[in-house]
Length: 317
Ligand code: BT5
Image (cartoon, rainbow, N blue to C red; front, side):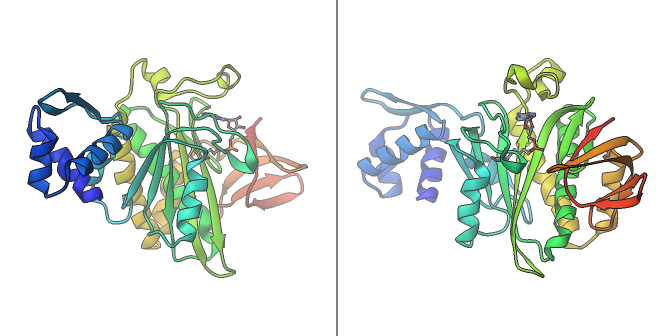
């Protein structure tokens, strides 16, 4: 089905106008089948005009032309396949269903808009049209204690992709935020299913404020790439760059090259050396962030000695 649709797209691209009959004859399918495929393409954001007595004309590609992106990919792990939707409640939730049905590592689910985007601990994540909201399915060959290394590699890839596309220097705040001048531009939500000694799958949800508006209440703490650059950001270029950096950095995860991940993460992080406060449920621990452990936990120097923090929210004092 997907192959047929791609063939139809190719014919539309090669011809200014092409009749349903010509498409049907070239692909040995019925005109009704052509019409059904055209309708699906239109739903995916391709603007295809039906011109009376002449046929179909492709007038515009969607903002994020997934078919074209998929064809250009030269990755080893990431983006095979990419499944896109105009709307989803949450890309993490959708991908979790697919992961349970044995979908392959590297699958991406992306939505133009999320109606119930989530942060950690069921906090809500604002995801209107214009931002990049997607989730990635990974099956790293690790015990669950090492999951943080994967999140670190993903944060590095995002930071590098945004820098390569826009020139904006960003910093990583432990454990999962990417900031521009202390304002949040991206959040990463890692969810995993695991046995005692082996991760079954990880869903990495990535939300990046690109050209989307930000609600008033988030403006003091959040920003978007469009706000920083004062112009619209080329969405497709950024997504392609993200996929290629994610592929490179997940490669280091697969090769168990944790030293490069830890060292690069440290060079991009603005957390180390800062006076911080860690909040985890009802417990609040103040201290100085001194480094990260082999497994990506935060080393915190407190008045009661050094502690290793596995998870929590961090604020700078
Ligand atoms: C995160 O949570 O930062 C992880 C966000 C992950 C979102 C992606 S989008 C694709 C995938 N599908 C999903 O459903 N989720 C993932 P956390 O550290 O808990 O931060 C949440 C907090 O960030 C909220 O309580 C708000 O204060 C703030 N926030 C909400 N929307 C924001 C936005 N668009 N930009 C910046 N900050 C936001």
